[in-house]
Image 1 (cartoon, rainbow, N blue to C red):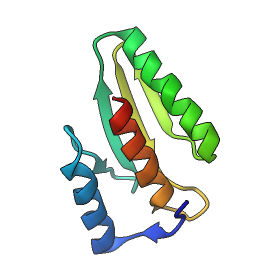
Image 2 (image 1 turned 120 degrees about the horizontal axis):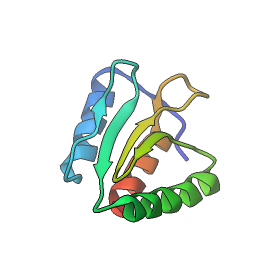
Image 3 (image 1 turned 30 degrees about the vertical axis):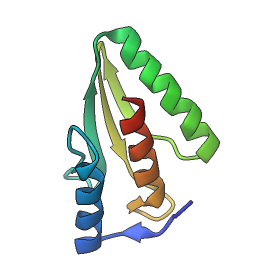
Image 4 (image 1 turned 180 degrees about the vertical axis):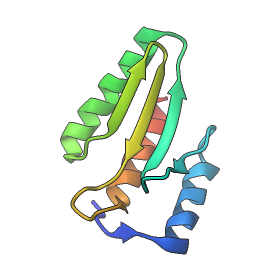
Amino acid sequence: MDKRLWVGDSLNERVDQLNAASPAPWTLNEYGKLEKEFKFEDFNAAWGFMSRVALFAERTDHHPEWFNVYNRVRVELTTHDVGGISGKDFALAVFMDKCA
């Protein structure tokens, strides 16, 4: 999987590409992480989403930072190995969008 560090204009272009296929936007937060909040019908749907993502994350050895309250899951993605956002984060974001 691509562990190249994305920065500057190429990072912004890649986020735009990600958002073109996403119903709700991913953003770059103040800490330089890729961020999104997912909303579900209820807690069970949110937990199911997190379970599917957790299995994918374990297979790819790339784990999200996330926070869950009832039907909401807020996610922050970054690749600690490279000190920023990499292709691993974009792959996980695409998977999350498909699961949601």
